[in-house]
Length: 563
Image 1 (cartoon, rainbow, N blue to C red):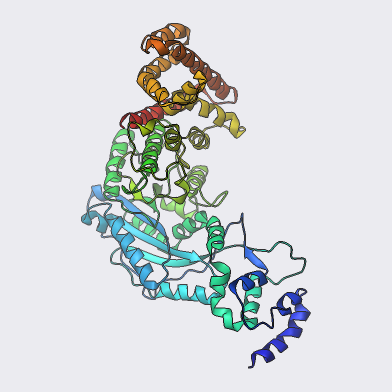
Image 2 (cartoon, one colour; image 1 turned 45 degrees about the horizontal axis):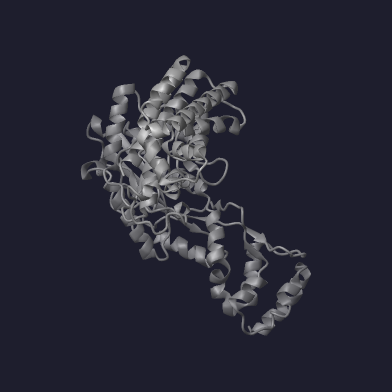
């Protein structure tokens, strides 16, 4: 049919059904050449900001389904069964997706010996991408999944889509079709540019950033966890009477050598000591050796703080998604006691723990954060700041720079940052009150011991601008400060004598300032301990928080002192 005839037939229909028909049939309609900019202006929708995409229900599976299971466990030491769940971003082509799955499976199997990989590991990969307005793009993705070859061993993969939210452009005073109908209409009206529409409307720097902000991390984890593939392996492990751990990983993991061997050792040691299985474990993550040295050291500090905190408040630190284990019970699984869904779009691990604890499927005391065999990842974009760009090594000289100390302490989501540490601990404390009534005092208690915070407090107290000499002085007396502060807290009636004893360990030129610092920090601790008790925390819990702060600070000090 001639294009002009088609348009002529469409015009009365559009005018009847669409108040804003002038938008579609106005001056652009008769143009023969259209630029991408014109089309973007012409379309009444844009990818929404401050929204969350939705995981769609359809699941796409290979035409030939896998039916392999782990080899039957041979003896008692094989009882830990690791059910690995990984969401994986689809490649641009079927070949790229196939290679990504193959590479991922190879890395997972390196987490233990070849013998145990065949017997105690099952892998479920959820290949996903965003849903396009163009149904042909989505159909191509579904076909790609159906044509994928299955990997050897107990491996399953399937595909699904998540749909970004669109919003009407500001300033539109007329009614518009839904975004999908508007897109189909655009394809009909402008058939010559139809193949380019997905690229024009859905891709580009701004569109990609807006869509990235919408990624439904919780929904994606949930889709993999509640899949038929995962359920099949859970049933298998129950039939074999295995102790099942859900292993949560990211699809872009770089390496995870010996990960499950380390978990085997940690679980055995925990059981020998406590006579029951741990419900949650993590050995954290680290960055590749060729990543930014400041960020790599900051992540090491972060993981050390999480491990130190977990000794006293087991689920106090955040258990990161790149590497966490959750013990799964079949009966609890079948009654939906476990779920990644909750407030927000991310913090999947936290939501899983909250749901499991609330349903009685997890004990908050049965958790363990390890300092061994972390997974290796690339650096998340959110970690980068101008302060760390261009630094190729950490030296005994540049570690004293204030910007360096702030970067080490303040990496995004890092627990060496007192506020992040306090926020994380608050979520598992047995108290219901205004958040800041608890996190504020916790943060200030951590600052009393935190070596970087003590250095900054020393500098502010002097009234001068920070200098590297402040670092040298505080690090020089920190061991003594730490020991005497704990002694003063334990024996408040002897606080003055302890203060004087501490002062004698400090260089005479700095002695008076050190005494003032010590007294101020002691007063801060006492005031904030009392504040926590006032809002309802018991003495035993406050003591655990103090010990978590003390051990975390020691971990930070050791990392700084090792440079």
